[in-house]
Length: 162
Image 1: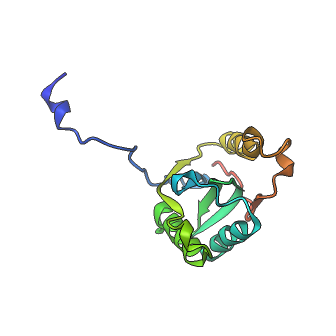
Image 2 (image 1 turned 90 degrees about the vertical axis):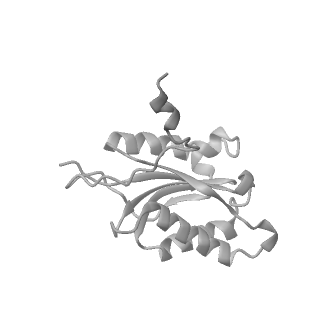
């Protein structure tokens, strides 16, 4: 081990990279957001309405397919306004939901961190969606993915490759 490696900063999480816009290729991100301490607050009609309503008001990014689990959300999204970072957008809609949440005892609702990754191909979009839509079944909440009521698609996000 050389002395130079001792001077490197210690990271608690990976560095976040901005989405890469490659000309005509689609920019689609897969995002996961969790509740604070993974509390099961989200799998109900009230929370579902708050989440979807916040996305409709947070128009810098378009939400495609999504699944809302009891303690986390998986979604696919694409930028409308490239000057608005994914982090800023997520902070914005999480704060909208928090302000409208009717149970103050549940605050804070969200983990500060989120997880995101840019999809590189149309195949990865399809594969990730297959994984996400089966999440309620893997958590033994339903027997078939179609039975889970807290999922949907707000905007079709199509994959375009130059």
